[in-house]
Length: 452
Image 1 (cartoon, rainbow, N blue to C red):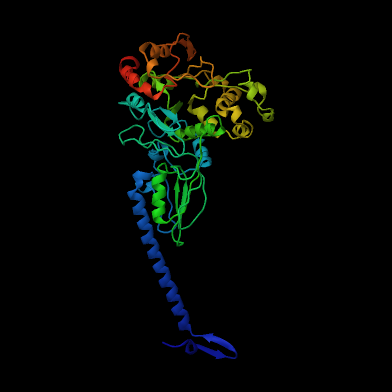
Image 2: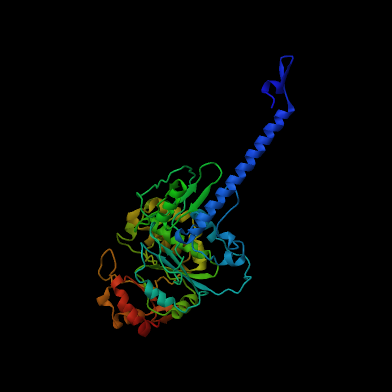
């Protein structure tokens, strides 16, 4: 091996490098690059295997690898197929709210569909946590064609819908709000409410050869442990839904947008964990699919809890004469659902000026429908609620209240309503609020009275 001095010669005060030195350096760079690629591929494969083995436990929704390709559900499902585009198999996805609303606002311009379309009803559950009346809903959906309905569940961050894979609610929980952020490091850090099971963002790195992004993991505790084992930095981004705040209206719109991703969903009904069906599935399905109207309350309340919540800062876009109030438990058709998730102008005004004392969930949709789509609305709800106690919350029905006569009084209302321009006594398809201890007597009555 020649020394550096032997490899270099000096002519006229200038150093001339031996060409063989450049070849050696090039060979060294090439070998280092190949070794780097091999190490990166091996590491990527290891992480892929690790996450694949935990896929059921943490519902990893979306992942990107900087070197070695992409690994996510697209490896086992053709994400560009018509079936996946028209009827997404999974409720979870990796889109931000902005991306979600943009995609949900898409409307085909061709009148005919390139497939046989069966209209579906989207049942959207807005819940703080568990669904205590789930066994009743399981019975309601039992034996029905999945081509006629879809289920979506939006819960508070940290709650995971834990059901068996035979349940109609299996993998039907949608993510809360998604936010991005780039971080790398060897440790695990949770930002937010001090280590609870909450949804979040994770970007993984270290070593400069792999970057992993995981979006909104319902089983956050399991994911944080996994991230810690891999030496990854985690930032959890909490989006709590607070009753009376604009975050509740955000959650409603997020449910609508997720349901709109399925092009077969034609009707969209918002429900809570305390809601029950009072008719069987086919009666509900035919009633909603056959309706020419939407079902959303929208009325002028001149009192402090109506007009008293209006802010004059909304002028001139929203005038006091436009202001309306109504129950948040709506039922909409696809046309109106798209209009609501596509609206940015008026919703931005509500976000800015409708403070928690204003209760946006009781005013945004009623006001928006009144201003632009009043003729499309039946101006009533299909969900029964008892406000006779004149309090801030409706009556709650426990085990002692559940009788055949009580349920029948909801099913066949004493006062008639309009359905497709004709009078009917079937005004309510659902009812709330029912306590968890009402489940047993409701199950006893479901087959004999409610038909399921």
